[in-house]
Image 1 (cartoon, rainbow, N blue to C red):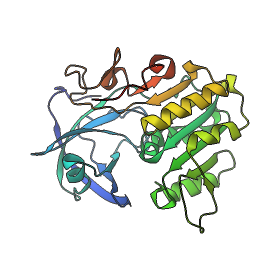
Image 2: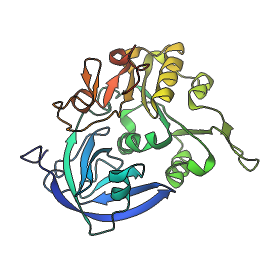
Image 3: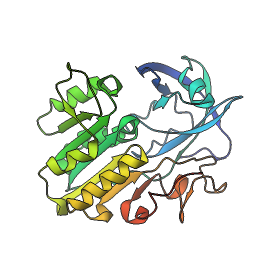
Image 4: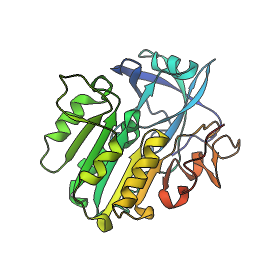
Length: 276
């Protein structure tokens, strides 16, 4: 459910703030009127820092819990840095939810490959929550997660808890590590060929840097997964979230309203294009 005026940010309070990594924070916001209808895993909100600017941030919380909205933010620019620094009881602007979600209903009955790179785990976390809340609806579930170093692993405690589940496989790899790291080293697309899965009965959900998604999609195709069963979350430069400004146009798609989640058959041939 959206606010009556989709262009007007609704003032909401920050309820809590938790540091995840050196420059990454998770904020819990009150839902206001905009967020009371909940959201789909994979959707995003436009969050406005008054006097600074507005940015798109994906949901990173449990979609079944509608009493607060959870967003994980990396401080990389003026608006995101100010947003990440927001203390409890501070006020921010909220518009949304916007965009398409992960294919949770269409994937029921199939095996799932959930593949994340770096901060890309945050937009996939609502899908993981949904799967765990409805575990009987899905087949085998595997999470592949890659990041630069052990110090950059996001949601570490949750990953460890998920890995202890008997029906949820977690594989973590890092680009580089010291001698104290006993896990896998290498890029996350390289994990795909090591898995034994039925490509004809698998849905893949991928989020991370575009180069990682491009190579991951290639690895999945080489393994026999159909383009229509590979879903990517694109996070190009969204400004209005309504498909009017054109900032996020990607081929014939507007990422804000046609995405951010798109099947690979719609993106094939576009991922090599640079954003200017």
